[in-house]
Image 1 (cartoon, rainbow, N blue to C red):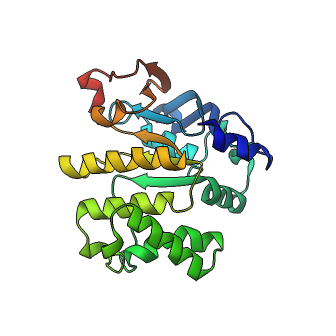
Image 2: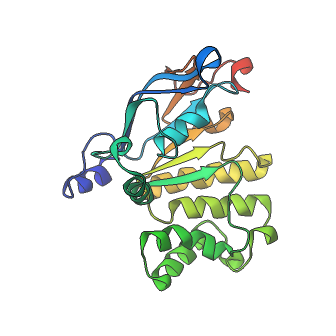
Length: 251
């Protein structure tokens, strides 16, 4: 787990947490209808660590991921990627840092329908400024890694649900990010495809030493993480490894 973090030290990155937030808070609404969704979240994620976040519907799990990924701004608190405070950056600089350090997987794949699987997976590299040749080469290699070599020229509408989600995993990992933020990544899949997606994410976590922060209601996935955290009443609390929240709070 530490090899990748130590190599980043030579480039000025911290040897501590890859991703962390301090006193993160978010309120929606105003006046009498204001809702405090997050009230003071502290979280550190180490290189290669796998963290599951569980909680009831509406607890703020997706909101937390959006804040950690710089897709939304907190009302209070800070988010750090390596040694850079993302919440102090402007939109352009924040986007560059996000592209360099983070990958995203959603419940619904969010592949661009007019592009092929290969083009979708290559997109983050093209945004980063890689040459088309290099981007396509890296995308092809990652598609092969997730078992979609033969489907590279197909558009999302020509892929099955499981294939679309594997393409989304490939897109998230093609930049070899420090951390992947995944929001219910198997929530739209049947059991067999969900199990295959679990296996793939865990295998790539070990191979690339990429950290994963996964919002999930699936106990089978959560129990394979290094830590399980429950988001409740705007705060995170740890749960013992191999356990999950009570059923009435997990759905």
